[in-house]
Figure 1 (cartoon, protein in one colour):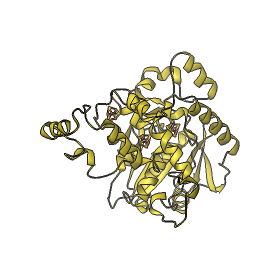
Figure 2: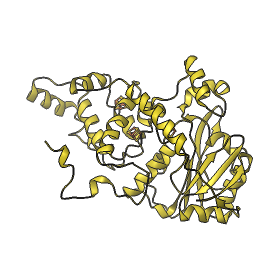
Figure 3: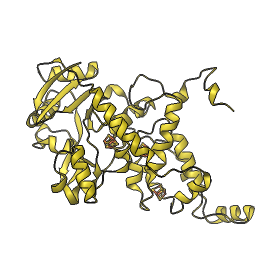
Figure 4: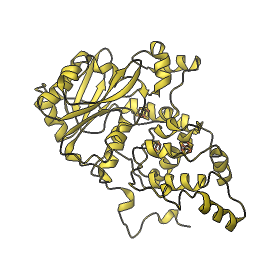
Length: 355
Ligand code: SF4
Ligand code: SF4
Ligand code: SF4
């Protein structure tokens, strides 16, 4: 693929150029908000902050940026600069007809694993700008741990979307066009493009092996009783749904009286069954949601971060979703042209899975 090597200090000019040359009308990109990292929506090239590389490569996760642009049906062309799990979610949203691909320029950036935003803010000096495995272990020894979702993530190198931003050793970055749209954007910036190899097979294999080991070490939920115990503190606040980039129904069943019974409805249910657990529908809510996101979950862990009861949802949603995705041999967000498994009808499929 074609790309160019630039200095990390050149990223400011790179993003300004995208706006100045009207490659995009706006950019949704990370920026430093005090010691935290947050997203901003920029339309004025002059408002691109200096040294944007610090924020875009920072090992910090607040929200999944695909959720910010979910459902946008605007004529403007939006550039989204985000980590691979966020770009993969945006690609799933395109496939789910929640966004128009032609109005999105997706720029994925290398990710080395992330800390919850608050953890990052509290320890940003110790964490520093770059994370290598030695550093991750050293921080772990001090009780500063990566998010569980990042420990089991095997797709953190930038290789999705229209442009990949690959962080090299030192302060160099390769920007590579992954699609015609991406390459056209780089050409518009008058970068000298040449062939670039960014596949990094060995590094990907090492990351995948580490992620698999970490996933295998997670406590398992092996029965409905164990799932009930896992969810016992859930207050059905639905934060996990609201922050999930790929949960997109406009009218959620669990906001309707049947899915969210109150007062008389709740009493009627209790009378019918003799007794019911309250808050109602804990299990039903999570079983429904896992079914809805089982093929599209990108394992970002935003749901776990958002849970006020600190239920480690990464052990449930991404873990189950990955099993379903393996059955369908489907990798969410990898390829915008690949159809969603549930919309493809094959007369004979999954025969070996049928009882
Ligand atoms: S889930 Fe993967 S891509 Fe997303 S923040 Fe964590 S390591 Fe990075
Ligand atoms: S279910 Fe959780 S891990 Fe999966 S995409 Fe949604 S927020 Fe991310
Ligand atoms: S965020 Fe936590 S408490 Fe709220 S519905 Fe989800 S699992 Fe339950």
